[in-house]
Length: 123
Image (cartoon, rainbow, N blue to C red):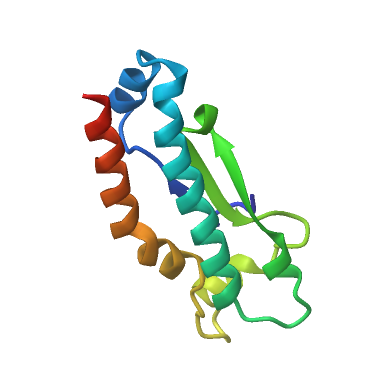
């Protein structure tokens, strides 16, 4: 991932991750599915929003699964995504044109609702 350019989709606490490890792998599948589905949606949303010149930044946006699928990182990868922070945050001479954070915000409510449903199944 390009330094400074990532959105993490996470259960949000180490305590939650510790609890997940105590459940059977089959029960974790639903939670991992929600994380993966949301990460892919954020990726697609970011690709639709990013300004396109050569397409390098858009094409560099990837999903990286972490913590065994219990969280994911979405963002541009180097070397092709090196311009992403300049596009997202702007520069002295260029206004910001956010694409990654708006994509993540769009998916936030759905992610929280889906995660609640999955966690309710585990109790």
